[in-house]
Length: 133
Image 1 (tube, rainbow, N blue to C red):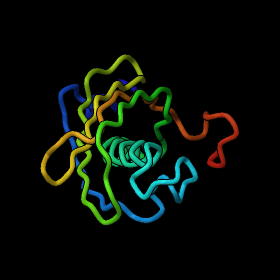
Image 2: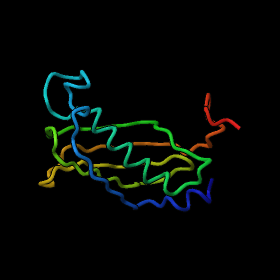
Image 3: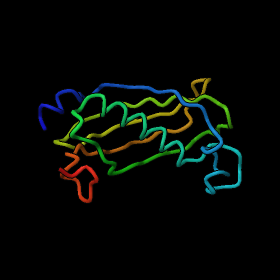
Protein backbone atom coordinates (compact mmCIF):
# COMPACT_ATOMS: atom_id res chain seq x y z
CA UNK A 1 0.00 0.00 0.00
CA UNK A 2 2.86 2.37 0.80
CA UNK A 3 4.18 2.21 -2.77
CA UNK A 4 0.75 3.11 -4.11
CA UNK A 5 0.35 6.05 -1.77
CA UNK A 6 3.70 7.38 -3.01
CA UNK A 7 1.77 8.77 -6.00
CA UNK A 8 -0.85 10.42 -3.79
CA UNK A 9 1.11 13.24 -2.17
CA UNK A 10 -0.61 15.82 0.05
CA UNK A 11 -0.85 19.20 -1.63
CA UNK A 12 -1.66 17.89 -5.11
CA UNK A 13 -4.63 19.58 -6.80
CA UNK A 14 -6.81 18.55 -9.72
CA UNK A 15 -9.67 20.31 -11.52
CA UNK A 16 -12.39 19.25 -13.91
CA UNK A 17 -15.07 21.22 -15.77
CA UNK A 18 -18.71 20.19 -16.03
CA UNK A 19 -21.86 21.59 -17.63
CA UNK A 20 -25.12 21.55 -15.66
CA UNK A 21 -27.43 19.07 -17.41
CA UNK A 22 -31.16 18.49 -16.93
CA UNK A 23 -30.46 15.39 -14.80
CA UNK A 24 -28.40 17.57 -12.40
CA UNK A 25 -31.35 19.80 -11.48
CA UNK A 26 -33.21 19.54 -8.18
CA UNK A 27 -36.48 19.20 -10.10
CA UNK A 28 -35.14 16.16 -12.00
CA UNK A 29 -33.72 14.49 -8.90
CA UNK A 30 -36.92 15.18 -6.94
CA UNK A 31 -34.90 16.90 -4.21
CA UNK A 32 -36.75 20.14 -4.84
CA UNK A 33 -39.05 21.73 -7.38
CA UNK A 34 -36.67 24.35 -8.76
CA UNK A 35 -34.72 24.37 -12.01
CA UNK A 36 -31.31 24.78 -10.37
CA UNK A 37 -28.48 22.36 -9.68
CA UNK A 38 -29.17 19.97 -6.80
CA UNK A 39 -26.68 19.52 -3.97
CA UNK A 40 -26.44 15.76 -4.70
CA UNK A 41 -25.27 16.66 -8.22
CA UNK A 42 -22.49 18.82 -6.78
CA UNK A 43 -21.44 15.85 -4.66
CA UNK A 44 -21.35 13.68 -7.79
CA UNK A 45 -19.18 16.24 -9.61
CA UNK A 46 -16.80 16.27 -6.64
CA UNK A 47 -16.65 12.48 -6.34
CA UNK A 48 -16.08 12.06 -10.10
CA UNK A 49 -13.23 14.58 -9.97
CA UNK A 50 -11.62 12.89 -6.98
CA UNK A 51 -12.06 9.39 -8.43
CA UNK A 52 -10.47 10.48 -11.72
CA UNK A 53 -7.55 11.94 -9.74
CA UNK A 54 -7.08 8.80 -7.61
CA UNK A 55 -7.62 6.17 -10.29
CA UNK A 56 -5.06 7.79 -12.61
CA UNK A 57 -2.50 7.17 -9.84
CA UNK A 58 -3.24 3.68 -8.49
CA UNK A 59 -2.94 0.19 -10.04
CA UNK A 60 -6.13 -1.29 -11.56
CA UNK A 61 -6.50 -3.92 -8.82
CA UNK A 62 -7.19 -1.09 -6.35
CA UNK A 63 -10.14 1.26 -6.09
CA UNK A 64 -11.34 3.93 -3.71
CA UNK A 65 -14.52 4.06 -1.67
CA UNK A 66 -16.29 7.01 -0.12
CA UNK A 67 -16.32 7.26 3.67
CA UNK A 68 -17.47 10.77 4.58
CA UNK A 69 -18.68 13.93 2.84
CA UNK A 70 -19.29 17.43 4.15
CA UNK A 71 -20.63 20.08 1.75
CA UNK A 72 -21.89 23.64 1.96
CA UNK A 73 -23.95 24.65 -1.10
CA UNK A 74 -23.73 28.44 -1.39
CA UNK A 75 -24.87 29.59 -4.86
CA UNK A 76 -27.50 28.43 -7.38
CA UNK A 77 -26.60 27.33 -10.90
CA UNK A 78 -28.96 26.89 -13.83
CA UNK A 79 -29.20 24.44 -16.71
CA UNK A 80 -26.34 24.83 -19.20
CA UNK A 81 -24.02 26.75 -16.90
CA UNK A 82 -20.37 25.72 -16.62
CA UNK A 83 -18.98 24.63 -13.25
CA UNK A 84 -15.38 23.85 -12.26
CA UNK A 85 -14.58 21.41 -9.48
CA UNK A 86 -11.16 21.79 -7.86
CA UNK A 87 -9.96 19.19 -5.39
CA UNK A 88 -6.97 19.30 -3.05
CA UNK A 89 -5.44 16.26 -1.36
CA UNK A 90 -5.06 17.64 2.16
CA UNK A 91 -3.43 14.67 3.87
CA UNK A 92 -3.02 10.89 3.81
CA UNK A 93 -3.35 8.58 6.81
CA UNK A 94 -2.47 4.98 5.90
CA UNK A 95 -5.06 4.03 3.23
CA UNK A 96 -7.32 6.99 4.07
CA UNK A 97 -7.27 10.11 1.86
CA UNK A 98 -8.61 13.48 3.02
CA UNK A 99 -9.65 16.06 0.42
CA UNK A 100 -10.91 19.62 0.42
CA UNK A 101 -12.93 20.69 -2.60
CA UNK A 102 -14.56 23.75 -4.11
CA UNK A 103 -16.91 24.20 -7.04
CA UNK A 104 -16.83 27.51 -8.94
CA UNK A 105 -19.08 29.17 -11.52
CA UNK A 106 -17.72 30.90 -14.65
CA UNK A 107 -17.22 34.13 -12.65
CA UNK A 108 -15.06 32.15 -10.18
CA UNK A 109 -17.65 32.61 -7.43
CA UNK A 110 -17.74 29.71 -4.98
CA UNK A 111 -20.82 27.56 -5.56
CA UNK A 112 -19.96 24.94 -2.94
CA UNK A 113 -17.13 23.97 -0.61
CA UNK A 114 -16.50 20.89 1.45
CA UNK A 115 -14.39 17.99 2.57
CA UNK A 116 -14.33 14.36 1.51
CA UNK A 117 -12.68 11.23 2.89
CA UNK A 118 -11.96 8.10 0.84
CA UNK A 119 -10.25 4.76 1.45
CA UNK A 120 -7.99 2.92 -1.00
CA UNK A 121 -8.93 -0.77 -1.06
CA UNK A 122 -8.06 -3.88 -3.05
CA UNK A 123 -11.05 -4.64 -5.27
CA UNK A 124 -11.03 -8.37 -4.53
CA UNK A 125 -10.97 -7.80 -0.76
CA UNK A 126 -13.90 -5.40 -0.73
CA UNK A 127 -17.07 -7.08 0.67
CA UNK A 128 -19.50 -8.32 -1.98
CA UNK A 129 -17.25 -7.08 -4.77
CA UNK A 130 -18.08 -8.20 -8.29
CA UNK A 131 -14.30 -8.18 -8.92
CA UNK A 132 -13.48 -11.09 -6.59
CA UNK A 133 -10.65 -13.30 -7.78
